[in-house]
Image 1 (cartoon, rainbow, N blue to C red):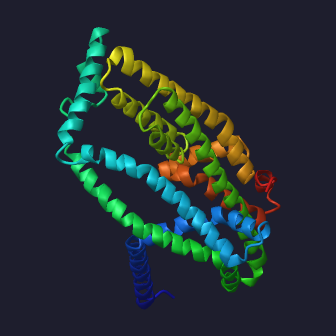
Image 2 (cartoon, rainbow, N blue to C red):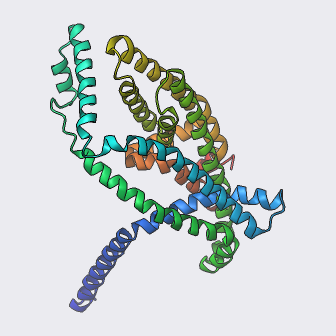
Image 3 (cartoon, helix red, strand yellow):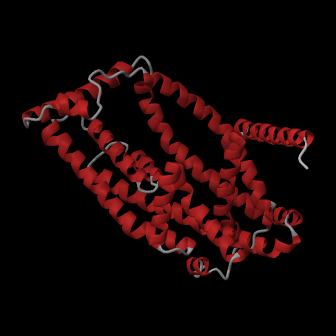
Length: 363
C-alpha cells in the first residue's frame, strides 16, 4: 500500500540523487584540468608501452631505467617542438603586440585591397561578394591584444601541465602491473577474466592506433613541408607542423589547414603583385595541399588506421562520419578509440552475436 510517507521518501530520495549528481558534475567541472592531464597521460602511456617493452626486451633495460628512458624520449620530442616555435614567436611577437597592431592591420587591409582590385578587374562586384561571404568592410584588430595576453597565460600554464602529465605518465608506465593487480579486486569475480582480457586487447590496439596516428601526422608533415619549400613560403617548417597537427581532426582538419596555408602564403608574398605573384603561388600551394590530402585520405590514413585497430577502412570512415554528426569535432577525434573499445568488449561479452562476430572477426 502506497502511503504519504512512502511518496515523501521517494521524492526526497529523487531530490537527493539529483543534488548529488549535480554536485558530482560540478566537481568534475572544477577538476577538468586534472581530468585532461589524466587523459593525456593515458594516451602517452599507450604510446609509451611498446617503447618501454622494446627497451626491456631488446636492450635488456630494467623496468625503472626503461621507464625513465621512455619519459626522456617524450620530453625530448616536446622540447624539440617547443624550440621549433620559440624563434617564430620571438620573431613575430612584435606583430602581436599592441604597439604594432597597426602594422599587421595595414598588411591585411593591403591584401584585402589587392584582392578587391583583382576581382574588379574581372568585372566582379567585390563589395557584394565580400558582404555575401560575411567579410566585414571595417576590420577590427583589437582582438590581437587579448589573444596575445591569453597566449602568454596559456604558455605559463603549459609548464605546470607538462610537468603534471610527465609525472603521471611516469607512474602509469612504471606501476602498470600494480594498477592491474589492484584493479582485480574492484572487478566482480564472475566477469574478471573477460574484463582483464578486454583491457589487455584494448591496451594493445590503442597503443597501435596512437602510434599509427603519430606516423600519419609525420607523413603529412613531410609532404606539407615539401609543398611549402617548393614554393618558397617563409616559416615552412612551422606552418607544415601546424597544418599536420590539424589532421588530428578527421576530414575537417585538413580543410582548415588548407585555409591557414593559403592565408599565410598570401601574407608571405604580400609585397608582390597580387595577380601575377600572390594568387598563382597561393593556388599552387592549395593544389599541393589538396594532393597531400588525397594521398592521406585515400592511402596512408585508411591503411594505417585499419591495420592498427583491425577494422575495414570503410568501417572507420562511417564511424568517424556518424560521430561527427552526433558529437561534432570532439566526436570525430575520439571516434576510432571509443569504437575500438566497444568492439573489444562486445567480442568478450557477446561472442555469439552474429553482428558483433562479423565486426570483430579480425580482433
